[in-house]
Amino acid sequence: MTDASHPRYAALAAQVIADAASRGKMLTVAESCTGGMVAAALTDITGASAVLDRGFVTYSNAAKTDLLGVAETTLAAHGAVSADTAAEMAAGALAATPSCQLAVAITGIAGPGGGSAEKPVGLVWFGLAVRGADVTTLKCQFDGDRAAVRTDAVETAMRLLLQGLAS
Image (cartoon, rainbow, N blue to C red; front, side, top):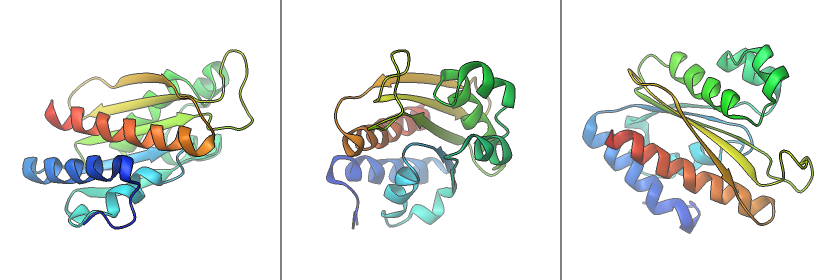
C-alpha cells in the first residue's frame, strides 16, 4: 500500500488519502523546493486518484507566476521563500482546481547553497488553503542536508494536509 514512499511520511500520506476519501475531499499541491515529492508520496498510496486532483511543481519564479498567479510584486518585495509567496501559491493552486477543497504549498531553501543570513538553508514556508477559509502559513527552519530538509518539508506538508482535512 505504501510502495516506494519514504518511511518517515508513508504512513502520513496514507492517512491523508484515507481522511480525504472519508470526507469526500479533493486535494492539490504546489511545490517548489520539494519538486513533486508530496505529490509522489500521495500517489504511492492506493486510492490517491480519488482524492488528488493534481500537483504543481513551480520551481522557478516564472512558474509560480504563470501557473499559480503569484504576483511578480510579491516575489520582488518578499522573495520566493516567504509567507506571502507560500500563501499566494496555495491560494493559486486552489483557484486553479475548482474541484478541490484543500491545497498545500511549499517554498524553501533546501541547500546546500542559496541561503543567506536573512533566509538560511533549511528555511521553508508552507501555505494551506481551505476553500471558504483564510489561507494560513507556517515557517519552519529545518536542519541537515538537502535530502533531510526536503524530507522534513514533505512530512510537514502531510501534517498540514491532515490539519486542513480535520478543520
